[in-house]
Amino acid sequence: MDFDELRIFSRVADLASFSRAAEQLGLAKGHVSTSVRQLEARLGTRLLQRTTRSVRLTQDGERFLERCREFLVEAEQLQAMFQPASGGLTGRLRIDLPHILARDVIIPRLPEFLSAHPRLEVGISTTDRRVDLVHEGFDCILRVGALGDSDLVARPLGLMQMSNAASPAYLREHGTPQTLADLAQHRVVHYTHKLTANDAGWEYFDKTSNAARTLPMPAAISVNGTDAYQAAALAGLGLIQAPTLGLQRRVDEGTLVLVMPDFTAPPMPVSLLYANRHQLAPRVLAVMNWLSRLLTPYLLTEQASSPGV
Image (cartoon, rainbow, N blue to C red):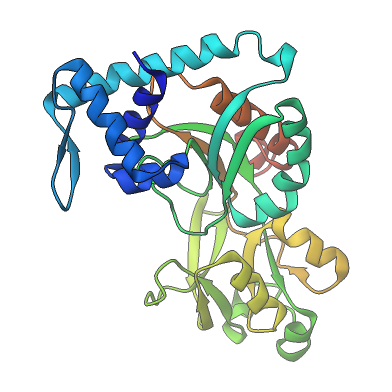
């Protein structure tokens, strides 16, 4: 059985596209199509049903894909048994990271990971939208925030502390809020993935009811990206609520000021997501373990984030 044919078939099946599989694997589309046809001829069955608009697995293809994935992971594990002593892991990794964590924490430390595995090729996405791990071909995703329903496996890493901030110019013009009642004289920068949404508000933890609350507030501007969110605060367009880690550099340089420390949003969960498979490829497990060790000093545990702790 040809290892490359199995790898190509698996990627085409995951992405439901010959073109996208070819792009991600760095191969010509014709080569990908030929490889799958040769595999089907060798097996004596059709694995993929192709039309001009779609590519989907046949019944035999579904059964074969499950075993194919297991075989590929086991083969990579065998191949990696002695690699740490002779130059580290090999292969390609595609991961999606929150923009500010990638910029301020992960990428500056990436050389040390790659020095241990110089034959790894790492592709990093830093989009603010929620990517589709399987159909976009990612090996793992680092996500900040509630996960919702998903077929993916989640590896919780901890909680990210939140803070409130505004520019000195904004505070000079509008005053520095101290209480929730003071917020009636203020506005927020609204972070939302849907720019048509009109649900801006101030998130805080109500110690009386022991529950998270949102106080509706006006917003002069809505944004859907973390860079734009912070830029709006720097421009004096309103108050923002963001992870403390992402604000610290601006606070240290004096371009943002922390406010209302007793009325911050609840800490946000940080998780690594990966496909629901019985085994992880060694390169994926290695980068996940590295990310976990790297981020742990910046995160809270559930106990440490509880009121009164």
